[in-house]
Figure 1 (spheres, rainbow, N blue to C red):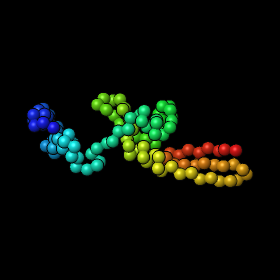
Figure 2 (figure 1 turned 60 degrees about the horizontal axis):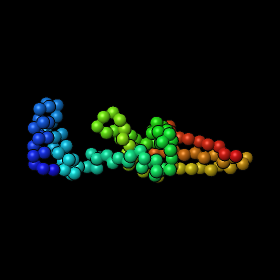
Figure 3 (figure 1 turned 90 degrees about the vertical axis):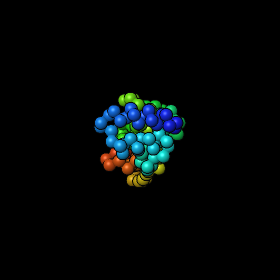
Figure 4 (figure 1 turned 120 degrees about the vertical axis):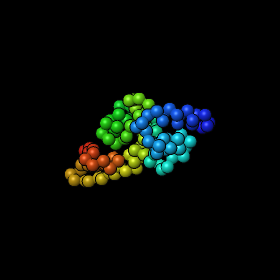
Length: 125
């Protein structure tokens, strides 16, 4: 980042009394690419890429988001631009399956992303 850009950002932000000096320094560090911790940066996976990775259609991806299995990432406005990389990895790795053979029926249970109360079940004959 050029020094002129940093000075322009600092002078513009100083006009807002709600922004503290600590908040400003964290924002400048993030713009330089030096976040204090990994929690400060959210990695975005676009919807199209997430659908390709999971091999699902848009409607299924929306269902996963609605059920809380995946977390949305919002852009500058109120519109979602994708899902978090962390939630996508969590969803892909924390699914479990149990098979029970009672009377020839196989029951599949699973929990996606370890969300309490969020589960699905299906009976196959």
